Length: 162
Image (cartoon, rainbow, N blue to C red; front, side, top):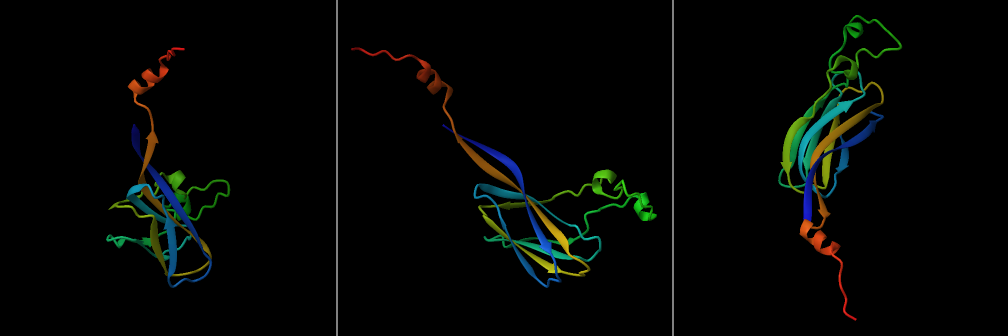
């Protein structure tokens, strides 16, 4: 008997942008047992606006299915950050302190896509930064198991005639 289980997983593609990029292609490999892609999130370590745009493309009839402007990681600034009050021991403007954690944007892409192609189109460049692309997907895992009746039959002692 084969038991199938669907698990939701996330793959992260981290790319270092170390120079001004007009277009940068990024290949994202996902497992072959993926049934559908359910969410996308793009973040960056850059602290300025207008970093650029990211476009995601599937290698099937779906083609381009996602485009978004890249925004800094700190979604909502705290009062201390707005008033320029520096506290070196406390990162008060970070999402884990303010409670404003970025959420994956829902997409519904069905099919067996093993590769996704992402295109980063650069905007304003000030210094090197990291670009993170989170791809959430549902993967099928198959297990070969025994039926409970088969296990009972296997547990019975066998008699042999000599």
